Length: 204
Length: 201
Image: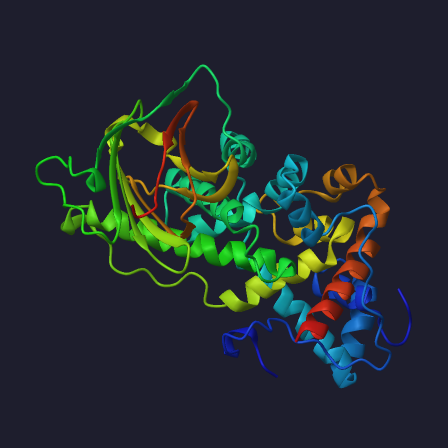
């Protein structure tokens, strides 16, 4: 059985098992706007759509910058550079559905640039050795975030809260955020994760 | 939970240790002898946990969130407010009035220098594709502080390109439409406007 670490860089992160009864691709919740729709609205200078994009992706971009060895201040600067690059590229992004991986890639590139700049201004004796790339499974993680964006809706918010937030919020906290009962969180997470698996299967 | 083939949620609960001991034993027994599909589902869940756990999301500082929201409006249409001013052109190599040490006009690019409330900045535009130029620039950083500088290149009032200067004050924007006629520099609440003419005369 292939493990994630054995995979090449192709963005097929999580293998989906063969299914005897393949479910249909999950529909996006009507209550949740897709990245594509948000980008389309941003192109019409809709600042509310922009704010929603910031809400969705500021943690992801900031985390990529931090994980590339930057200080909190430098990571914040790289995050801002990345969102400025998004404004700059609104009319040139090729695939709106891959916004998550696009932002991750830009943030990573900006972080490299920031680190190189820092090295030029840091005394040689204090410059660290080339650090190990913290994203050995970069393609897998990027594809996973694209799939989460495709999933959208409460499912995306639930899975991000349960599995990606460093603070590991309780079921009670997540239920409060999503406006659901605590008892419904467990079954919902199973359904949502199964949908995510189908999306990844389709995209692979 | 079901008796017989476990559902995806059963397997997820089992992998995550959320089942009562007797239920967990039932699932474990099934998995141990089960079909490939069940085994692969379990493997997929574990891989998902590994991938998600490899990059837990950090919460950015609250002031950054506010700045990111402001970026959009600030770049799209810099407002004329109390803290904006016009940059003054120090030299333009096309005019032949270049200061000592400045490259003379070579007929193949535009070299400009400005003075402003954010400090002096230089801008060099060289031909790129049809109707486009590549722009490289440098802003004196001592007056900038920690806020950094965001740049908006506008043509007839519409945002054409945007960039953020690096910590050492450099910026590099490729493929800028040559009809861009205005540059706004924003740092914190301070904004500077510079009139641009990037055409080769």
